[in-house]
Length: 100
Image 1: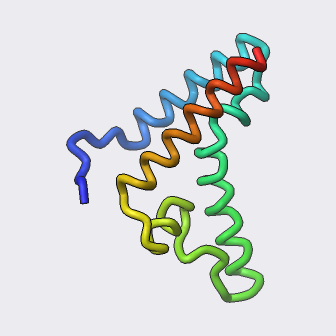
Image 2 (image 1 turned 90 degrees about the vertical axis):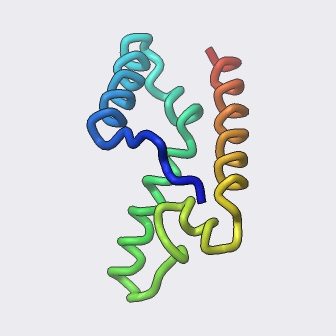
């Protein structure tokens, strides 16, 4: 385990997210966020899916939500999750730049 040395919290993360969305809207490219921010979108959707599925069936769709915890409980190490998610994000950012 690698405990956080600095914890941003809701205030910092909401500010950064808001700035990114504001820039995308200012540049008239809001749909590019779906490409470059696919990991955060999937993390959010995994929580929504887990709650809806649990309310309907009483069972869990993922071992735990958000999605990175599912992979953690599946045996992936923290470093592997961060590395894979970072590589996916890098590839998606390059694809996003090609779309521009």
